[in-house]
Image (cartoon, rainbow, N blue to C red; front, side, top):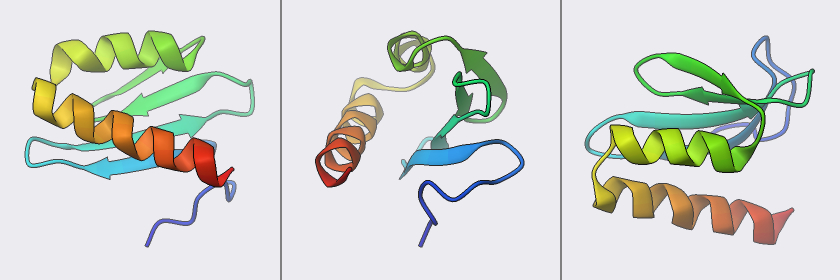
Length: 77
């Protein structure tokens, strides 16, 4: 089980989704940016920018899985 919102070297883990295509993790960095970790790492100003980039990387089914996990995390927060 992932330890959400506990500080790591990359930032605070916001959401982790494991899809058949790849593992997707979103971190909130100390600079309040969004780190998207897939097969590589990219930093974005907003979660919306990160999601737009993710949409180009994964299938529509995997993208829906990520969106469902993000909605769950927001409801728990």
